[in-house]
Length: 163
Image (cartoon, rainbow, N blue to C red; front, side, top):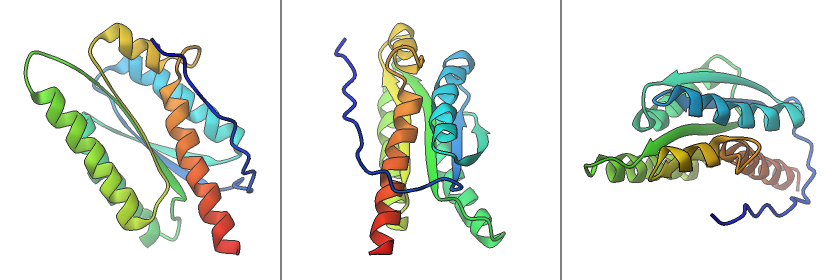
């Protein structure tokens, strides 16, 4: 397995006090616990508050994010970023391809259409061992990576809005 490559992000635009949404698919509970732990650690380090919504599978994540963004805006408490967390393990049918491709496409469409910082932490793997290696904070920490990705875009958005 290739080592994780994390270039240090130099943008230190203040995002303390920002609000994030995490939507997690609880298809694999233990793996999801590890992914969530990694994401939450990054948000806390950045001084952000967060809410967690849980769905049954990765295909439900994009719609749930869209619904939550609209509701939060309507209630006067908009989110500044979102993190999608899930795990799709290849099986014997093409369902793996459908779930991995369509959830990723929908997240990208949502992020671009709304110009919204969104970290895609839906891991797509061949085996449960690969999932664990990606989920654990002591290994590849893909939950933390998804949060860092969303926060990097949020920092850019805030910095450019000031200019």
